[in-house]
Length: 255
Image (cartoon, rainbow, N blue to C red; front, side):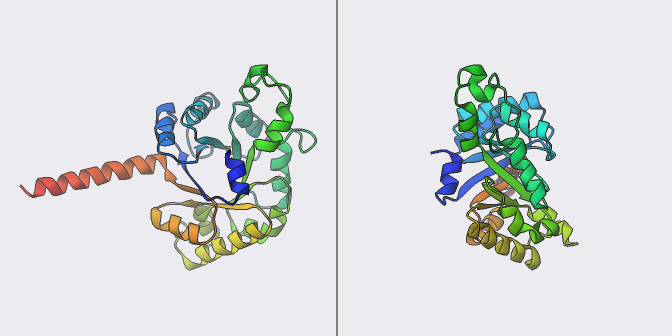
C-alpha cells in the first residue's frame, strides 16, 4: 500500500528530513523501516542531480521519497516530480490562492497544468508513458506547509482546496511568527497545532507536523497528527554519536 493510500486510511506515518545529500545515508535510513523521507531542497544543499539519486535510494529501501522544494514555483515542482519523487512538499503556503497554485503546478490536466513529458524518470523514460498522467494525478502526495500565523488564519480556506493530501504545520516558523522564535514548546504554539489538526481532519485531509525530538512526537500523535517528520538525518546521527560518546565516557570514568 502506498503512502497516499495509507494516509487516506487514517494511518499515522513516520519519516524524517534528509539534509545530507548521500544516497547511502538515505538507503540506510530506509532500512530502519521509516515510511517516508523528505529530501530537503529548501534548507539542504541538494542539487536536482543529487536528488534523483536520493529518490532512487529511498525506493531501493522501500521508503517513500518526498521532495521539499525551496519555493512554490512551477519549474521546481515539475523537476522534483519528473525525477520520480512520490510527492512534493511546498513551504510557506499562507493563502488559498497559493495552495491552488501548488495543485496547478503538480497535477496534469484536467486537475492542473504541470508540463507533460513521457520521457522522464517518473514515466520510466517512456515505458510507462501511456496512462502516466492519470496515474501521477492519482498517486502523487501533495503536502503544503503552513508555517505562520497568517496561514493558520486562512487554514479553513486552504483545507478546502481539492487534491491537497497533507497540510503540514511547521512549529519552528510558527513560533517565530508569534514572536517566540524557536520556542516550539510554548503553550500558544502547541495550542495552535492542536487546533489546526482538528480543522484539517474535519476537512478530510491529513495533518502533518515536525517533531524536533521524541517528546514532541508524542505531543503530535496525541494531537491527531498523521504525517510526522521527526528530526533530521544530521540530528539523528549526531544524537547517536553523542550517546555513544557519553556511554564511553562513563565506562572510562569507572577505571
